[in-house]
Image 1: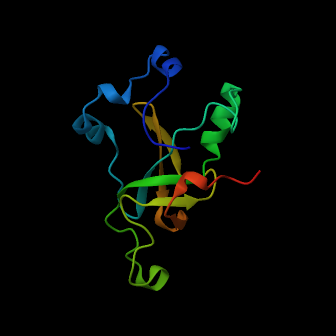
Image 2: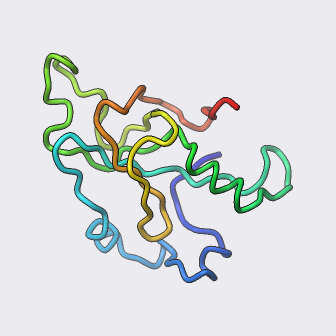
Length: 139
């Protein structure tokens, strides 16, 4: 099951900060505020083992899974996102708190306190997903 939470023990030992040790206000202050038509999306934590097994993935495979992620949680939306009525109609395609689907490799990738985020264009969102737990990238 994918989730957006904290780091594993290996990441902690590599000098990363455990998100549980950082106050919510500090995390919010560290996150960039999307401007214009940009959307800030948090990526779910990637599974460290192969599905339904205890076999660990390599670091390269885990990195690949992050890069190729297609599901995320909308954290913030720029003030001009979905304002073009000709392109988007009267309703925004997504809002803060929605799980969304987008193309792999979309947006600018970065981490804050061990959680990976993407800053992407409003038109990069392809769908809103009610329950992301069962959604996986086709191989």
